[in-house]
Length: 123
Image (cartoon, rainbow, N blue to C red; front, side):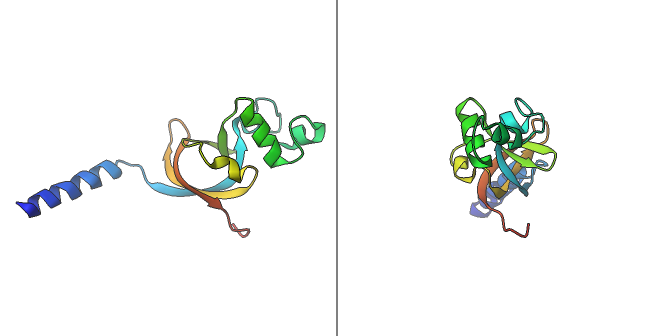
């Protein structure tokens, strides 16, 4: 009976974690939704805001200012912008190249992020 209960538990865990959702690593820059989603930046970057000295002096300070004004932390990877489900602790990586590990919801372009770390300079 103990064996059956253990096998049932393993099958339930496997089924709940393998419904087409794989944990993956994403490399990019921690940005804000306002700059990255073209809310106030035509180039989808911080460059315009920095040049105008509107919201910051570098990518990190610009992103922090935009989040304080209602934006969200996002991962910008090339032309792709991924919303980050968990916003807590992301500010420390503002403007930095990072590796985000999580599960992507392709419908909402949101990463269920469970780990963020600075990316190696070679990545």
